[in-house]
Figure 1 (cartoon, rainbow, N blue to C red):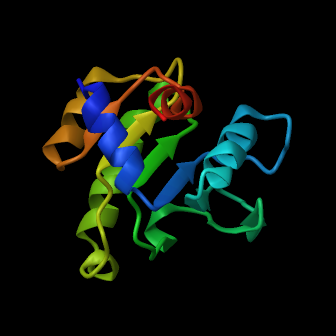
Figure 2: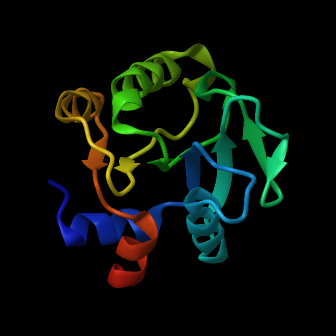
Length: 144
């Protein structure tokens, strides 16, 4: 479990967030939460299959394999059943040559209602701290 002080430190030092499942629809939670995090100064990179090239004025890619940015936090808006496969994708992405000189994420944040104990253990083995079944907006605002 990630303590409040650890989470606060990550929020204070992080510069960028990859949002898995970022929706271009303003009424969707991923859009509103991401807009808030963007307003707090974070660079946002959307990851969404069949994504438009930009959401909230920030670049989007269809998969992590296409992302070549320094990422500090991976924020996930997917269902629990997708998390194991996502962690496998994260592992491949982190080990890819294109990420050799990039900053690696410190935190995998699974939004409210999303958790998978086995996948979370796999993510921790990759060196990620994991927060599950919580809202990044609520946690950020609470720890500010």
